[in-house]
Image (tube, rainbow, N blue to C red; front, side, top):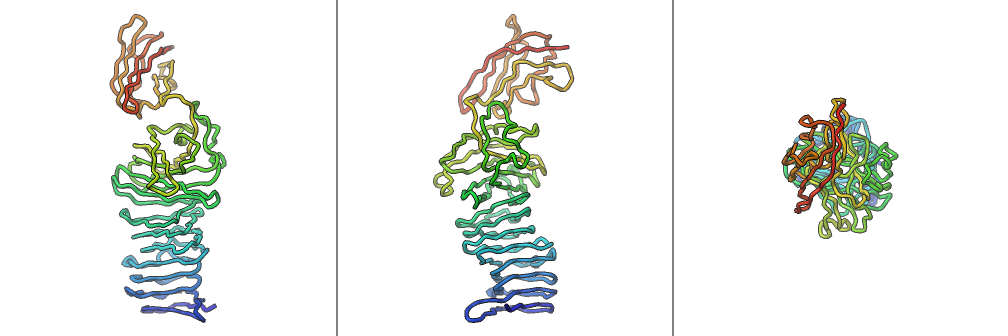
Length: 397
């Protein structure tokens, strides 16, 4: 093996270290300032190790082996060239986060990323699998900066693909699993400029503490093979999100792990046909106005539910000020703001009326005494008015 150790100052136009048509060079930078001019090429036929120094890359750098960065800065901020990885299998490691100007994965390689990577201008996955092992891959450019053919990103542990987003623009997270042999992309549109991360785990969510058996009554079963995690790093966390799956997907809706440590249905959710969008991902579950809490992992999964309607209406409450059941709750009503509520006493007198009944406006019964009341709730669901009627028992101590 030919090892090239750089410790001085080099002006690089083109470096090709070849033997019989094969490249064996290893690059170890111990302090050199390397300049790759426009239209120039730095070819590393084996591992690239960065200990000290810097690279100003305005051309191309090809690496056929592992990448090791033991310092925080490798490429000068003015760099706008490509760094192309061509190995069939390679590892990114080291103590430092590498910020690449333009990162390209070429061929059918598997690239295991064990240390954080930032990409400033563009990321091209090609046909490769980029595996994030307890590490993050950041794509900093919020424009049209992601390219791929059949390539995808897989995650393990705390691995996450993080994207910077402009308000109102949709961004794709091409996630998948080589173990399961599936792709499960996510597309996210943020309401404001934000930073959102996404992961895909090819295992039972119960293994990670999100028990499939901790679920609301309407949920029959939660997918035990895989689940997604979204995280809001910056911004309001209000997003429209679509989870793409195969047309043969047996599950019928989308659920998430709530602050009550249970799986619950996401509302509203629509099922869409996307046969022309991503090959093999002809179906999606889409929801608008999903709220992601800042800095919190939010797991999502596909699930099977009963034929129950989207609302869960409670038939009793006790407004006694103890912080439990103090208001009359209509679960999921916030997803259907076009509604009108009327509540009557036993004599038919109207005691409460509210247009746009909402969790922040739940009836607290302060204008009435203990007893049985009757409600009529009109809700527009899927463009049609639906009416719900029933009784409420209010108990005051």
